[in-house]
Length: 270
Image (tube, rainbow, N blue to C red; front, side, top):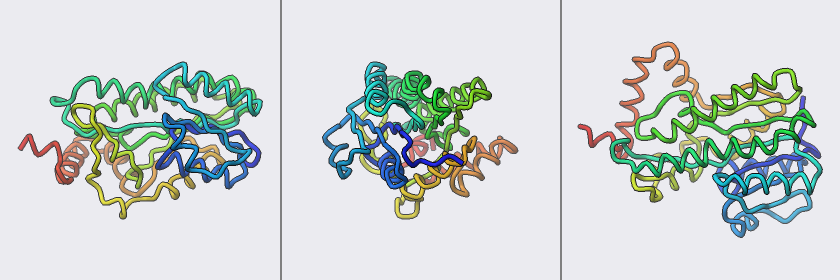
């Protein structure tokens, strides 16, 4: 079993939600944590300064930022044990209405951000036989209406990580991804609308969702046990299995579910 104490853990997108909770949890486990976000001032203000915490300004959609972040981390602590690709954004709009720049942005952050950071961290992770993690979504298993770009980016992330895991099968390093399901975080508040602007309001009752802290705990435990994949929440597991076993039924159930959410884009079609 892998323990996080004294390990170097890298987290992308750590200024809110699951990323913020992951940083806090890793520090509590005694890890040395390097975390990046686009807003360094906001990021640094979230945590108590510590010799075990390294905050770095980086936009994961920019390859040079990812390269610099990983290089600075390895220079500071001599290597990387665990890379958690958490940075991500969502969307909520019909494909017929969405500007293609929105889908490109989601692919750049959710998919390419994972690819960039993984590429530059891989030599260090291989050296320490560490773990590479992708924070994915149920949308990576099942395409969701009104989230075409988000689903595409998460499908791409999972395909990339599955191929990489197979390549590294006998290397000693490990690759995994997790699908949190609906979690109380700000990802829906900053989700892109059809024109690329922030949605600002979430259609879900955040009080009824899994907390970011609970999600982070499950992810940390999964890393320690080198899990292959983790699908969280009963609803998430049910969605994955119904889609696999009864895909036509899944189409109807998923459509109905998202049609009934407040201000659903699907209502335009009725």
